[in-house]
Amino acid sequence: MKNKERSRYYTNKSVKKKIDKMLEQNARNQSSLGTGSQFDIGQEESDLAWNQFEKEIKELDPELYDIIKKQND
Image (cartoon, rainbow, N blue to C red; front, top):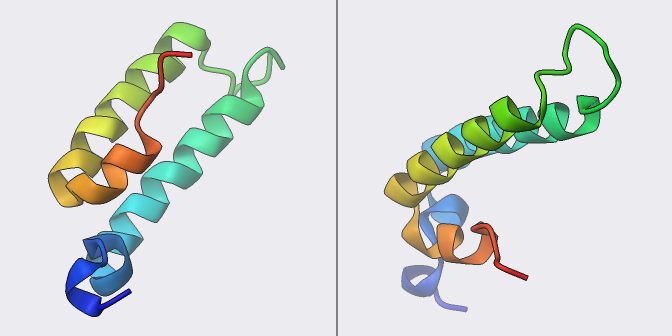
């Protein structure tokens, strides 16, 4: 794949760092669901956080967003 065809996630270190931070937080949110720990923010809050992350990722890198956006299965 040529560099100009690659998404900003792969070509811009700043964009990658921001997106990775959001994906890591989402992974923590998901892994804490149902544990009853102080980090368990609940399904509704987790969904709201993911929706916000999706919006921010779409602004940073629309190509990556198309790959990771929530799918209607």
